[in-house]
Amino acid sequence: MELLRRAQRLNPRDPRAWLTAAGISIAHLGEGQFEEGASWAKKALAQNPRYTVAMRLLAAHLAQLGQLEPARESIREMFKVEPHLTLSALRSRLIFMHERVWKNLSNGLRIAGMPE
Image 1: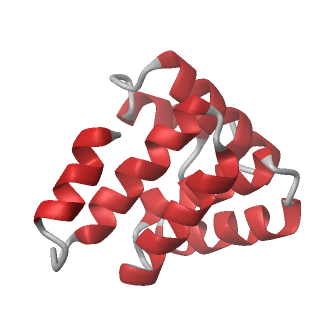
Image 2: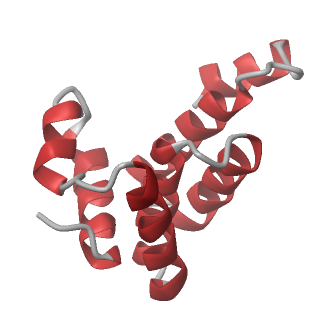
């Protein structure tokens, strides 16, 4: 988290700042800080509205917070870009992801309606 925040401070006009915002959102997901993580996912989407990583993160955070309709809306938006994505396909992409982070992500996405 500290390295991501440092990167933001060192390059406040980064044209790809959505990547750093999504990284901070992932870090919050791993810590179970869903409200703060949702805020960072929204920041990433404000900078890049078609960034599916941030759409998934937002859906997972919101679902974990019990905000099911906005979580489902985020999943619907993600499916416009990646219509055939499933949890098992996503897991194969994210095999490197720490188990605690994956557990929070997959549980949130499952609640939001992403198919297995």
